[in-house]
Image (cartoon, rainbow, N blue to C red; front, top):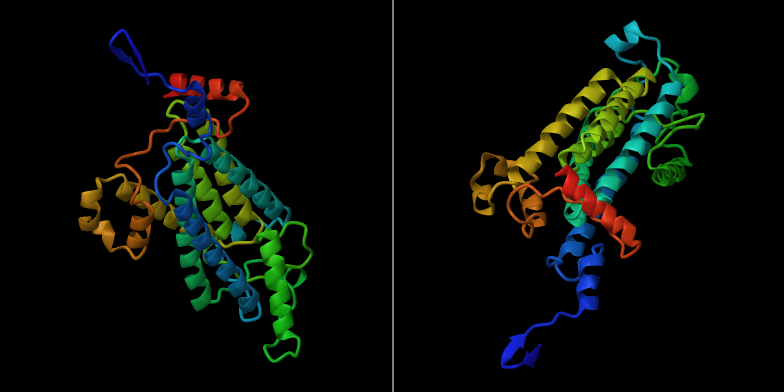
Length: 316
């Protein structure tokens, strides 16, 4: 602040102002309290749910019966094992696109936290379903693809369970390229959960006029889901239930937390089991839908900041 001829002139340090504008990845100037803590907590919830799924599969593999159920798709179309690799590739591609949208979003920490939490909810539900009902593998050539089952009294059983679990964690459940796989994690499809969440993230958090992303994301999602069934890796009901359930949870979550904060505890959806967990995560987020404004998360290069500003001007 300087004084000149009796008038007060306020000057702003341009370097500090530029730092506030550019270090958007950290949000040091405008960051909400507990932002990073809540994001890490959501990630921890997702990891717990995912690891529980991995552990259950290592055990369920030795329990499930081997005679497959009847499925209309398999009665009409012969199973194609190569299609499973296609499903893995499309799931990975969809995830890359989804996390790119998150990284470029102005409210990236909020969107990332929501994505982690929604994944945790879905995989938590999946773990419960996997643990109570054991559905036989849908593969027609299951004896060639599924690993041999072990008796629980086998002297190497616990060692085998540990080896399976570590292998699943390392590969994140992607089975492409493996000659023998664990079978039994069917109801409902985890790949479909990932494809669906990433698809909805791209729909919800891209600028309104960036419609061509939808034309890319939709075929990736539904071709990926179709490939999972065509491969014989999932029954048709596995992917349908996964898509429907993920749709309800994702859009229900967003409808709930775009309401005014004072109305949320009295809303009918507040009776859902995950509501109060999500309520804590959303407590610092402003009311209403997030503005789909993009910005470059790093200080350099400046050309990327200019490019994102142009996108925001032209595509809102």
